[in-house]
Length: 124
Image (cartoon, rainbow, N blue to C red; front, side, top):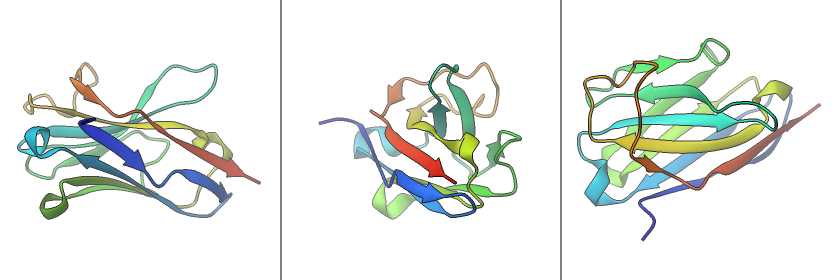
């Protein structure tokens, strides 16, 4: 069983909205640091948002104010709501999780579990 599985990607218009979901297996949900990353063609992977065990969140500047990371403990699911989509949001999006939570918001944070990715394409 893949420990993380993303869904909800697809195409959206500029200014539109998409909601990504990531179902995590019960074994790795717990008190984990969770995050969304993305990688556009020809670019390095970048962190988009993260959420720690207490629900504290952090966002990269390019999505701040128009994206929301959240989790549903009852469903073992992580979400990324993206609004006011821009062409530069086009990328493969990955969810990630790690049991080490104290450094959840740090740029040096590494993650032990990764999903397989879901494509987001924003078209004008």
